[in-house]
Amino acid sequence: MKPDDDQLDELLDVDDESGDAAPDSQDEGDEGDEGDEVGEPDDEEVVTRDGLVVGDDQLAYEFHEWAGESRGLLDNLLSSNQVQHAWQGTTLVIRLEDEDAVDSLIDQVELSAKPALDVGADKVVYEVGTWSAAMQNDLAESLTVADIPFEWDENGDLVIYEEHEARVEEILDLMPDPDDEEIGIDEGVAVQDALSQLFVACDLLTRDANDASAVIEAAEAAEAMEALALPFGFASSAWRELVATANALREDLGSDSDISDEEIEARAAALRDALRPYV
Image (cartoon, rainbow, N blue to C red):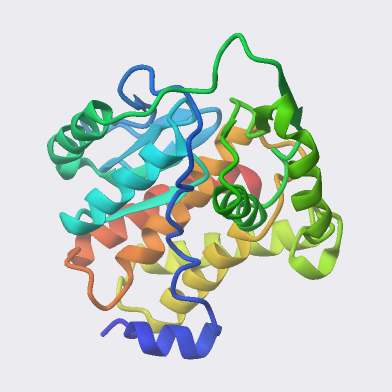
């Protein structure tokens, strides 16, 4: 049997919300078209994007042009409709079998979409694309509480109106130093350790989805990856999708998951193959 959620939390001392963090909920981004599908398989082939292999029964959407408030609404709809999913930044990973349901929810969100930042307005860009997902989420929450509209560009950097620059500077001054190793930002040994740990765990899970040690190791590695900044040599989109896929597997391994052992073994195999070039 897979360890239940309480066992995982006790062993890892992980905040329940950190494994599947909801996207930010502020007025930002351009709704544009429906979220771009970036990881849909063709028959049984494994699809790659920027060097990332997406599971052959999973689908990844990129919502960097969406307003944060809209991503938050979509996350709430997914949860209320019991659609299993995982976010990493603006990338959403779902099960392929839920594609039609998710597309329908996306349509609902687009009907209530808020406008983007004014294209003609003066803006300021802060280079935070290399920050960890955890720090970006904290920043987004602070901006939301302060009622400061913003958006993320394709590099994961923060874009705000120039008139709000002073207020944003105050928020940034209160945040931890992104170069502080104690908050988990390390582009060296920590990255390699997390990737190697996840690779080994996935390899074990391909043979036995109920391997308790492998379940714990995979969950721990996914949590560690979420706290890491963009590692040297990774494209921003590739790293975000890799972490999102790891968190999706972590959710699948939870005791309340209705995923079959065969599906978990297949997803673990796909993630293992995605990790192979990096270990």
